[in-house]
Image 1: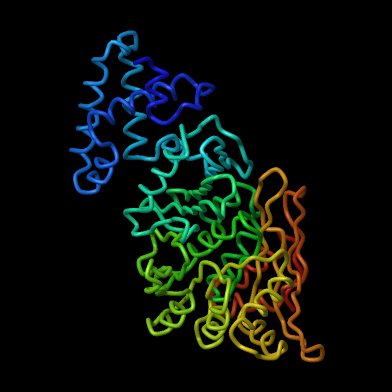
Image 2: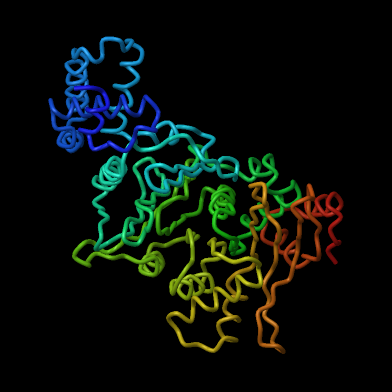
Length: 442
């Protein structure tokens, strides 16, 4: 049997235009499949991974005894075995991308088009799966140990991998061009405000100011679009929380990391199972967190009716809580929170906005620029105007993408509060104001 015949036997008759390595890998997999059941070994690997891998290696050695491999070097053979092991037990062609620290997101648009994000910019890679079946096998292998599945009856799934990466899968008929998978990676090391300053996300004056906001137990919301860096900033802000406080984190898919704080309790929402049971919503977790004696509650992302419970928590003694939400500006964040509250409670808009102004002290707006950079574009405080019966966003800080630092407007009340709450001394605030040309505190 020729090499191409083996490729066709493996169900890859349409890959004549693929790289020779892909064809060789398909041929090796077909030969190994004749000797052992690769799919069965992939399932057995959950209980005894070393034994399963050794069986595949043994089958590869037997396959290489075929005369068709006589001109293949030992180096090439080892590379093919390594790739086959990755495709059977690991992440296949995505293995090295997941191990690349410069890659922050992997986007698989069917078997032949794989994109990655580096430094906020998208790149089309030369990686590709040999077939839709290989991609589907990888999806099943990723979701199986998590107790999740995706099929025509349930064509969308979002889950967290053991390494902490978040994976989202959409399959036909919802996905028109085949299986679509997105993997969002998170850095092994938690970025601090100092790290974000070094990256240009914020300037030194804003870094100091936001540290004071957190330490003074002012409640804060980070708003922005998808991929703008909201969770990264939220995690950096959480590093400023004193170690003698108890933190409850609530997330749809766990992304926040507390590697140094000694007292963190993480809660994660759960989708309903195949029988339609077992769902635990963000709102359920917020309600339950109030019974867990939290000093601070951090909601990874506020997107629905849980907004009402979160605002009530912030207004009933849980100051200094943090959250994120999707919005294009602080003023729009108020409108979005109002809409989310009305998902559950038919309250007058002015009552909801009064609660928002009372609960949230500061809104930090994140922006992703055209070249992929993330930066804090605006910081605003919220105040309720009793004459207009509206919650107003008052800008404290604004920065354009082409500027190295931003401009400050007002903020006297907050600065006084930092001193009163012990987050900063009067001398530190005065030095900060002189250095940043901020207005003096009366």
